[in-house]
Image 1 (cartoon, rainbow, N blue to C red):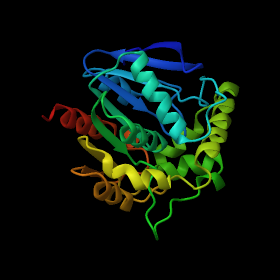
Image 2: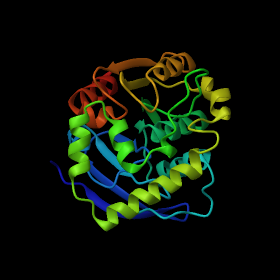
Image 3: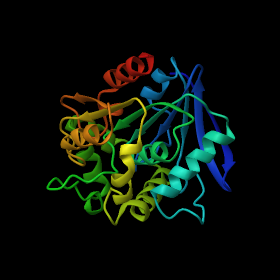
Image 4: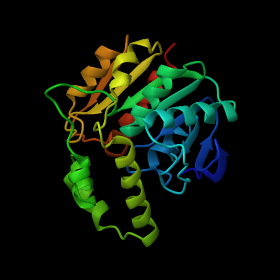
Length: 259
């Protein structure tokens, strides 16, 4: 596995933890509510094709909690400043779950630095009659089990020792997630009003057995974003990048290579 450079940069007054590796066109990966404190195998695979940049969001992991962070829109504006500060252009923007919500909000505001958009089991929109699960009622153990279709994989993760630092980060991530996505839960009515403005090649990836955001939401995003493509992973829960990593990487490489 290629080893990333791990460092801190200050953006909009927020000291931000960043992992980065690879070369080529930039791929900015925005993590979900569980954070991104470790360089994962799928990141290493993507780094064979892209300059992969994985920040920890403000308020998550080792990044600071800035005074200005009140909602997901604030997070989107932060990443517009992030891309400007590092002069990132023609970016493939990949966001999973809450990260997909942030990515959608970024693209609605300003697409000038973006080339393509990949939304993975994304929050952000509402589907009447199909509410998301209430992850705020789940314990950390229940959350892990419910995020995966492969229960054996979930149990292996739960059996791994957890350091005090990792435990503190998990609590911090849950608190920030609640701050940003508690009410309304996991969607923004303003995004629903304006997502039709999004004019960017978009790929929507989803696990068929997603227990947090049901697969019906994939069609909701297809309807909301003109020309969006959808790919569903069978026997997969809420984390295709972890549970179906080779297929996930292949889908992004193929999509990024299309004219």
